[in-house]
Image (cartoon, rainbow, N blue to C red; front, side):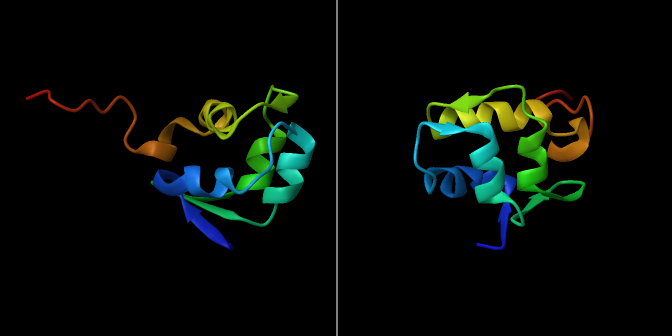
Length: 84
């Protein structure tokens, strides 16, 4: 896998064996391009910024990944659906 969309990140994270140390997850996913609304980032580099030292599941890793994503990665800042 060379690249993955943020909306499909769960597929990439499910390929890892859990529990997994943060450093091991970053190494495993280094070189994988994460496609975002505002461009792209290296998935391994994003995980190097994670505060967690270990992930018990793909859900844990995905939650932490969302914590280190730049705000604009998921679309326009402060955009809310349903207003209008």
